[in-house]
Length: 171
Image (cartoon, rainbow, N blue to C red; front, side, top):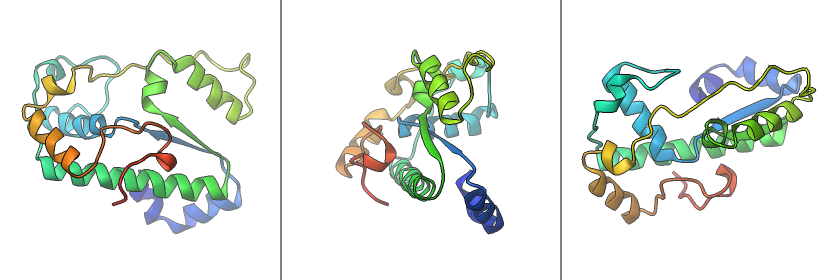
């Protein structure tokens, strides 16, 4: 999505001029984002409302260096857009993990408040859930190799706080 924003400068100007509220959905666990992209590429299931049976059987092999670069690029994009939007218009970062986890209703309520929507008038929150629930060491065939590469370069698996204030390295 970030590349779409960059590709259309008139859209950027329109969003700023009209003070359009931005809800920035961010994966706190960046490694899960990489896994999801690879799973989608392998299985051809890019979106799902239930766990596709094909996902249950797939172990993926990740190139450790490519994974590190992809994670750092994602982190850089998160930071860039968070900073851009936060400084120019109404902005709320929401983590995918909060939205799909036990705190889903709380995250949904925060979104409604941010948009100044009366919760009593809103529809019930969707029942979202993570599709990829396997532990990393079961999903990634070369997990130890990937983890070693990430550790050697100081790239943790997930944000501890917001993307703007995390200890991640800059790309």
